[in-house]
Structures are given as structure tokens and as C-alpha cells.
Amino acid sequence: MKVLVTGGMGYIGSHTCVQMLQAGLEPIIVDNLCNSKLAVLDRIEALTKVRPIFYQGDVRDQAFLDKVFSEHDIQSVIHFAGLKAVGESVAKPLEYYDNNVNGSLVLARAMRTAGVKSIVFSSSATVYGDPTSVPITEDSPVGATTNPYGRSKYIVECCFSDFYDSQPDWSITLLRYFNPVGAHPSGSMGEDPQGTPNNLMPFIAQVAVGRRDKLSVFGDDYPTPDGTGVRDYIHVMDLADGHIAALNTVGQKSGLHIYNLGTGNGSSVIEMVNAFSEASGKEIAYEICPRRPGDIAECWASTSKAEQDLGWKASRSIMEMTADTWNWQSKNPQGY
Ligand code: NAD
Ligand code: UFG
Image 1 (cartoon, rainbow, N blue to C red):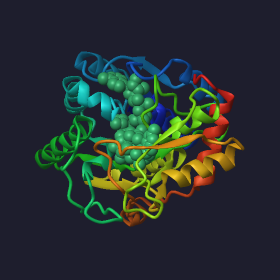
Image 2 (image 1 turned 180 degrees about the horizontal axis):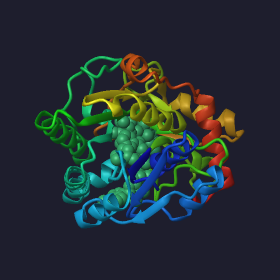
Image 3 (image 1 turned 120 degrees about the vertical axis):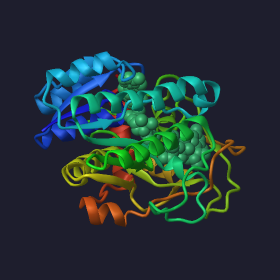
């Protein structure tokens, strides 16, 4: 099956393409390389012995997308392309809404023109805002988002939901990721943030490899066991497999399908620091700092709906997440 993968050169997209190729699926990648490098294609090829078809271009360019759809018999789309830095979205809201919302609308129009009716969309646990209870089920309230990035994901969910109501023969799958971390176990692919990392795991990895002095731990006065924030970290390889499971099950059935992709377990910042130390044999220097505005105390997923409908369950442990991140970071200290 040929699958258009937007943003397929990025962190989650590239790992998903590797797993797709191993599963006999044919990804056709569209990416404007605004947050990724061409070298990713070589790494995918080295791992899978297949060089995926790649188009450099923007999902907001419908003429470009029309051309890609006309050149291949595409059956489904996985839509990763978008901007994802929460802090940057506060400074550049128009860019975020244009890329994430407008990009999704243009893509949906191009799919309609091409008669392709199956899409899997990268949403986020951020649509739940500050959860009223954990674990978070797919029926938990959504929409109380705290920043333009989160709102852009929520708006796209609303657009796709309204669009589905008008086109009930489509298959639209909204996957709400929790906290993706880790890297390909080979150490040849991983997360390669530009500039200072916003997220915990790449920051810890850069401290371990000597690129940064110490980690700032944002708050130790949350109502959690050790006072630091608790999140549901999920290995990027499990996440990649979750997309394939979605494509193979609900992706073939009309409907508006919504799933959490998480492990169902919460880990604190300090637990992640300790796990990384153990996996890498490096001490991770840190200092306790004030809370980061907009952060929530804790969040983790209810995973039963994905298990039941997709037949998918995350299996990789925190030790694998930290060990694989260290393997990637130590072999590629400056990224790609
Ligand atoms: P990433 O930045 O590594 O990958 C996104 C890719 O999309 C990049 O290669 C970038 O060059 C490309 N891109 C961006 N705008 C584009 C456009 N207009 N046209 C074509 N290509 C474009 O990010 P990621 O971590 O792999 O995230 C993938 C998706 O998952 C994003 O939509 C993100 O919002 C979502 N998500 C990520 C996380 C996370 O923590 N990483 C959590 C929840 C949801
Ligand atoms: N943290 C630190 N120091 C850092 C970075 C993070 O202490 O330098 C803490 C945060 O306060 C939080 C935890 O580590 O308690 C995780 O923070 P991340 O920035 O790694 O992740 P978030 O949960 O804040 O956000 C991530 C993605 C969002 C997504 C959200 C929910 O960045 O895009 O998960 O899926 F919306």
C-alpha cells in the first residue's frame, strides 16, 4: 500500500517510515525540510535497503500536492507535517496557525481532489489541557488548551470532525500522542532538535554528551510523589508501530477514529534523570527552577481503547527509551 507521509523526514515521521518499510508498506514522503535534514533519507535507506520516494515541498501548496497525488496510486495519508514548539507558538501564532491549520486544510482539499479518503493525523495530548483526572480517556474534555500550538491541534481536530460529518465515507484517525522519546535502537536515527531543546529528554541527552552544563528542572512543588512533573513517555518505535496498527485497522474503515497513543504509565522528571544516568553511566547535573508557565502537574493515558480497536500496545520500557536515546546521542553528538 502506498501511503503519503507528510513530515516524514522529521523525528516521528522518519521512525514511522522505517517501520512501514519493514512492514511492507510504501511511504511517499513530502517534507519542506524546515525542521529536518536530507541526511535522514540516507539513514532510512541504510536501515531498510529501500530509499523512499521523497518530494521536497510544502503541504500548504496545493498545486504541488496535486502533482504528487497524480503521480502515485496513494491509498492513505499520514499527516505529521507541522510546527511543534510550544514557546515559539506563543511568539509566532500566525505562523503556527498557518502551518498547522491551513496546511491540514490544503492537504484535505488535495486528498478530496485526488479521491484519497483515509488520513491519520498527528494530534497531541495537549488537546486535553490540564486534565481533571488521570488516566486520560479519549472521552475526557478537550479544548482548554493553553497556547497557540495546542489550539492549532485542537482546531484541526474540529475541522476534521466537521469534515467527516459532511463526508461519512472517509476514514479520519486522530492520534493523540503523549510524550514521544527514544530513538531507533541502531543509534542511526533519533531526535535532532535545532537550537536549545524545549523537551526534557533531548535536553538531558545533551547534558550527558557535554553540549549543555545542566538541566533546569521546572518545579519540584507539584502535587506528585517527588514534586516534579509526571508524564507518559512513549518510545518513538512504539509510536511508529501505533501508526501502522491504525492504518491497517481503522484506516481501512470509514469513521472518525480517536485514540490516545501512550503507555499508561507516568514518570517524573527526576525518575527520567535517574533512568538516563543509569543507561548512560553519566551523571546528569540539574538544578531546581521555578515552574514553567503553562505546564501541568501530571498526565498519562488510558490505553485500553487503542489496545482493543488497534490491537496495539506500547511495549518498550523507560530503560529502553533512555538507552536508545543515549545510543543515538553518543553516536551522533551534533545530530544528523
Ligand atoms: P518534527 O519537527 O521532527 O517533524 C515535522 C516535520 O514536518 C519536519 O521534518 C518538518 O520539516 C516538516 N514540516 C513542517 N511544516 C511543513 C510544511 N508546511 N510542509 C511540509 N513539511 C513540513 O516533529 P515531530 O516530533 O516528528 O512531530 C510530528 C508531528 O507530531 C507534528 O505534527 C507534531 O505537532 C506532532 N506531535 C509531536 C509531539 C512531540 O513531542 N514530538 C507530541 C505530540 C504531537
Ligand atoms: N522539563 C524540565 N526541564 C526541561 C524540559 C522539561 O523540567 O528542560 C519538564 C517539564 O516541566 C515537564 C516534563 O519535563 O514536567 C516534560 O516536559 P516536555 O517539554 O518534554 O513535554 P511536555 O509534556 O511539556 O509537552 C510535550 C510536547 C507537546 C505535547 C505534550 C503533550 O512538547 O508538544 O507533550 O503531548 F503537546
